[in-house]
Length: 172
Image (cartoon, rainbow, N blue to C red; front, top):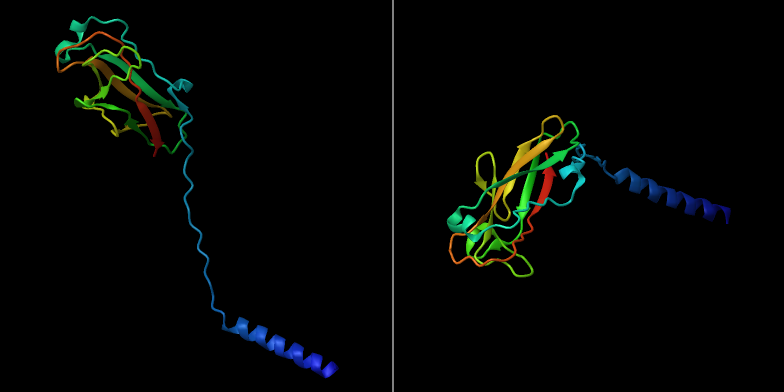
């Protein structure tokens, strides 16, 4: 009985050692990148920017002559290592004017009025899916913009004006 046990143990060890002897080496490679965290404050912590035109006479926006209103989106508290902030704009474009945003007022919308949005420094037209990139200076990036009410077709009918444009930020 003792000799059978020795034979079984010897055979098991031989099988285990033979299996280990034929195994190849494996290299484990680990890679990645440590990047700075995102900028922590957008628009001074406010989730909405309100640009109000108040009450305007229809003639003030006829034929694309609306008054421009300047405003900025500010991204701050950017950690060292963030060199640029990119912003992507999205929303509903006017079906009659692919370069301008649709008036989406829920009640009594003004007809034949769209919203014109541009990047102030070079008047780049901002439409759905437009990307802009601005540098970060001293932990702050400022995106200067201009907006106006626009009519290219005539036939303005008075009513409410509203548009929601989403600005999504990424950091490089």
